[in-house]
Image (spheres, rainbow, N blue to C red):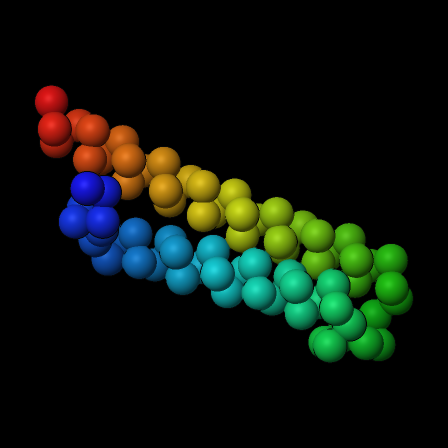
Length: 72
């Protein structure tokens, strides 16, 4: 089971991923930074959402590789 191998760096990775993703959604929705032009907000929001997804996948892959390495 992969969950038993979660350490502090994994928690940090998931937290950074969630915060980045949520911040990107807030920017895309227009709840923050309303004084910035819409095109810039959309571009920055999409980048933040994609960074959050990338960080999540990266953290998940790291945990799986670590658990597979210990099973061998």
